[in-house]
Length: 339
Image (tube, rainbow, N blue to C red; front, side, top):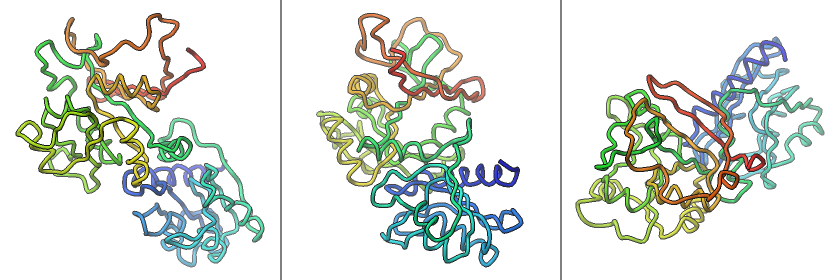
């Protein structure tokens, strides 16, 4: 891969990552247009539902400089007419000669773009996703595959594995940098999910806030799962003021969330809900924020045993480790082949 193309791939992925949390149920796609000299002349990303797709945004930015050039897209260009026209036709009309894309589109309603482009005389090449670069399409692809939102289970813990002290205090296990990262991450999610116990104990807001306290433009839906009523009383005043959804079961919540457009959700606890999600096989990614604190005794990440023997314990594979001040964020995906 030449240097210009390599940069275009990374820029397209960054453009897609920047709009994650604003496009569902559509995928957060990024696109870059190179002119016939290999120079970047346009960058675009998927707009909120009803708006233009990434390729169209990048072509608009490039203008006539796109003619005879190259398009680099994180997802195979769509080949159907929904709220907008097919991106394949937009690329053909703009005079694009070569299209590179990373992921094939698994959506049967939109797939086939590569074949349409080739039939029109456009050269088309699928590239491998670069290693170690944030891929904003993973949650969307996962959701489409399983017919439910992609689920990230997030928790903060001490070095010895506790999420709170014996008295229940947990503010704050992690430092300021980690907490800022959590809020930024929340802004990229379609929903934040907690259990009724956490809702009643913590009076959470479940908002995504900037370091100065201001809200991010994109805010996730607030979801509570459990049978206890949390719709009244001072214990959940923040949720009542901001608005929230409550469902009695995980399956009900996942079904309604998916049907209403959510593709990427963050489960924040508590221990009972975390155990239930893992036992049901719905956790796609674990985010463990590990702080340099020791308690010796306290409240655990999970409320219920997952296995009676080490051989039967669910196994996970590390995909990222990130230093956040004195804390570490470690991300894991399920690795059943290693169980």
